[in-house]
Amino acid sequence: MTPSLLISLPVSSFLSGPALSAVQLGMRLSKIPLPPPWVLTSSSPLVLRYVSKYPRSYSNEVVTSEHYSETAHVFNESNSETHEGAVKVVLGIIRFDENDFVVDIGGGTGSLAQAIYREARLKNNILCVDTSEPMLALAGEKYGVTPLQSTAEEFFSHKENYTFDKAFIIFSIHHFSETTLMFKKWAEWLRPGSVCLILTRPPTTTLPFFRKAASLFEKSTADVPAMVDCLRHHGLKVEVSEERMVLNMSKHRWYAMLRMRYMSHLHCLSDQDIEDGIVELERERFFDKHNITVIDNVTAVLVHKECYKEIWENNSFHL
Image 1: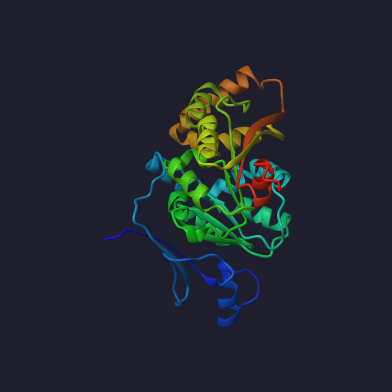
Image 2: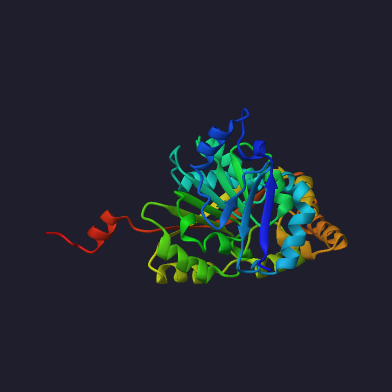
C-alpha cells in the first residue's frame, strides 16, 4: 500500500476569522497552491492528504520525530527569543509584497510563520510544511497559517508546488537528507523572481553551550559551502551573508531553554547530562552574572533565479 501523510484540521484552523460559506471557502482555497497529488476532500473537517511514493526522508528520522513530538508543547516557549531574532533577520533580507504566496518549510508550530504574516501584512496564509503532527496541530491554531504535513523533499518533488513567491527554511535544513535532489528541482522549476531563504548556523558557535552540548551541536550543522556549491552548480543565483542575533536574557532563562531542549541536538542528552552541563556553565562562565547576552550567529543563504533582465545584461546581449 502506498503510504499517506495526513493532517486533519477543522476549517476554522485553516482560515481564520468569521465562518465562511462553501462558496467563500472555495474561492479562498482556489488561491492557495494545492495541486495533485494534494487532495482536498469535501468532507468536514478539512483534510489535506499527500499520497507519497517515498518514505519520509529526514535524516536521523526517529530521533528527530521523537524530539519534536516530545517538545511540541514547550516549543514556542523555549524558542521565543530565537524566533523573534529570526523574524528580524528574515524581514531584513526578503522584501515581501502583501499579495505574495509564502511557504515555510520545516515550519513546526507555525509561530515564526505567523509573526512574518503579521509583520509583512500578508493577505494570504503562509503554508507551513512540516512532518510532525504534534507541531502542526499547534500551527493549525494560528491565524495566518495553513499547516501541511510533508517532508521538504516530497513537497518540492512536484512542479505544481512552485507557485509561491517566497519560501524560507529556518534552522531546519540540517534535517533534510535529499538536499541535492531538492536543489536540482529548484533549478528546474523556480521561476524568475521567486526566492528561497535558508537560515542555518555555522558549526563553530558563540552560543553558551556546555562542552558536551557544543560537541553535539558541531556535528549536527549543515555543510554550507557544499550546499552553496551544489546550488550554483545547478545554475541558481546564491547570496550568502553572515547575520547576528543578539538575545538578552537572564542566565536562568538560558538554563530553562536548555532544560526544554530548545534545539534538537539536545535531545540526545539525558536530564542528568543537562543538569551537569548547567553546573559546568554556572561554575565556569556565569557564577558572577545574573543577566547574559547570547550571541547567535546565523548564515543566511538567499537562493533565486536571475530574472530575464539580469540574464540579458550579464551576457551582454546588446544590439
